[in-house]
Image (tube, rainbow, N blue to C red; front, side, top):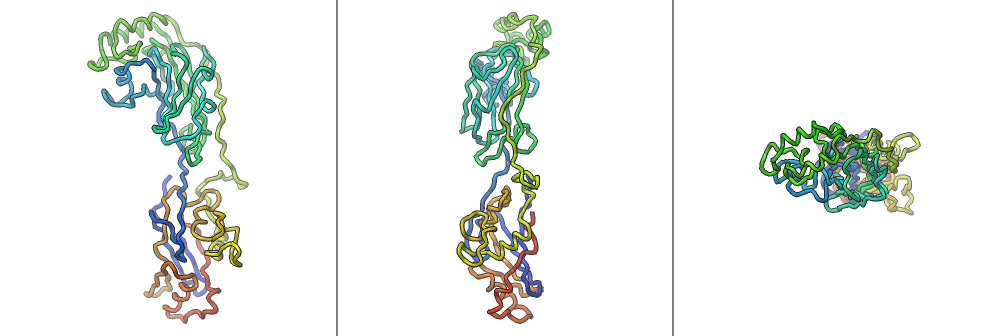
Length: 387
């Protein structure tokens, strides 16, 4: 989501359309116009995603893992082979999946992960699910190696980050959506066509006596025992499944809980940052600014953070997660009283609204506002937040 680097609040007095313009600057705490400090709130609205799914084997040799984990010899993820939809795992000993998340998540457990097959309809009863919080990575450890199976992996979108954003499982840029991936595991199927025959034997011959560490002709798809070399030891996997095919049926449908976004009465999805306080709400906010619970000017309708004081913190807590969405805390650097002349006056923290308005008129060509009229010249909002 892109945000503009600066935002403005525009206020207008009731007298002679004199403007008070405040510019909000990034990276500093909020300083409201009366000088009271109020810390802004950063709202994380970026959903977590899955950046990679990796097939692995607890008995795969380090040399083989180094050959399939990407980025060349001596580099890569150190886990296993990154899967893509429709991929086929041709190596014996596949018994583990890693799910890499873009950030730390909550809720990666047996209730929110599923692996379905055909020969074994549901692996749920025989697999262990764990989560590595340091590397924000989940692991599914199967009860044994899978050698001939069609598989469907599912990860629930009710998994969230620490801010409560649901997993973007379907990778469409929005929270929610089930992650689903179909792939196969068939030891000996080097060409991935679903049948083990002489086509796979040809791949074995082309890479025979080659090793991952020493030859560019090494083909990991023909290293069926996953030891880092293509040799006679791989023929056992070929022989065990020769002239066999994957099951014709498909794995069943996933049945995992899914994230359902909250919807407001107007049909907008809760958290949609295109919504913002209305002019009427901002007018009430300005009228009640710096008022506290119990005072005559206090207005509970604009005490959006519920702390009993109307100040800058309430803009950060505006309902429906407006809260200066996805930008750092901000501060008011200055408010300039502009009467159209060359004598602009900077309103400094510590002055009251009435003092600033009075000073503005006193420094212009107009007469100063009488002290007893100050209450009539409190600024009112004429423009909403500029996003």
